[in-house]
Image (cartoon, rainbow, N blue to C red):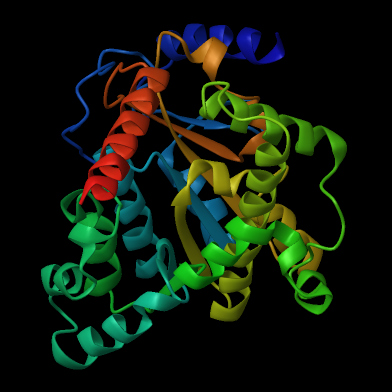
Length: 325
């Protein structure tokens, strides 16, 4: 109810506010461009819209800036690149850490650095991005271009394939006690955060997972969040994280583990949020989860459960075809 009231009020306030100064952008996502919130930035601390300069001021004062995206929204990546460029122009240039890169990519990244360190498209080819499982490199290009053009360090932040496979088999129980302690995983999530994450997993899988499967997915999410936090701590200050919005939530994700391990560090969590007619029902309590919300158009109106069902059918057909060979 609180989130619903806030979003209704936000829409009303947005209509009354003049458009804030913002970088010129031709929105790539076509739906919702006429929504009065598009391009505006909501500050959760002041409960109001602010200009881009205020977000950048707070970002420059932070040790770690987390930029949470919807992976297939090109506008989110353009805005991430714009923030990186702005941060690099003033103060200490940050390291840019990517959820999309893991230890498996370190060799390709090093070869690229030695051969064509100024060629962003060569980086995509060297990483074999086309077979990575992430959305097309072209929509991520503005983020990498921002880092490369400013000669910023690029850091892999995700778990390796071998680490992920081990997690899928054993969850947290497959990790040593020392490693769980090092990553601040030896204590459980607060009950509310745990329950909300479980609900989100069930909804994200359209009610097709329950019981032990949910527990295992919670373990995997927690370890991935803790690993992303670990990558930032290893990168040093300042650093920017490029990751899905779910990973940058303050209540249970990367900031939670940063605070547990380095409470003296200042963390700023920014979510790029697609406007939607169903936003009041679909979005979590955004003010509690993020410091800033930057509204953009949305990519599509596809039913996520229908899409999930189609992906499952593709997987089953692929498995059946392999079995028949």
